[in-house]
Image (cartoon, rainbow, N blue to C red):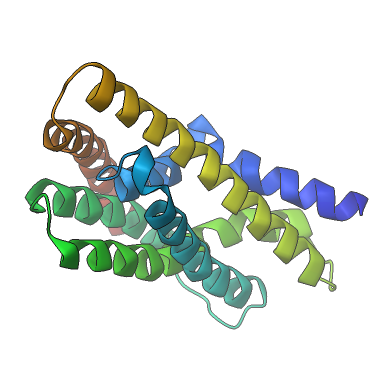
Length: 195
């Protein structure tokens, strides 16, 4: 039980760690179009992201899938750029966009999972029984994601409902800010990838 607790804690702390803010930005971009009343949709969205990153995290930790680390580190901000850009061009009541967000969460989760795997592999070392640590780490990541979502939804609630700002203005503002940060991150990591 102590091992489970350790990996659970590492999982949630890893995703909310401000020094590795790329995953925070992705979760923020995913839920930037939602308000607190949409919490069920957001919960499904975050769970889709967890399913995606759980698959590649397991495959990567088990050395079934091996991908260049620099490529993954470049692709992570690219997923953020695409998600944020999609928010900017999304029509307010577009039902298909919700499904597109689910696709982004699941598919881009596969890429983020390979990024998480480097951290988890370093923790596991030569340990052979990885089922419990893998499960605990993934549950910790999910808990961390829910913390980020709660903060973003509360912020959206305050800005849209209490200040009178339009929902679309909030979505444009937060998505454009996320886009700018992620675009610069992509360019930096492209430079590393090209070396």
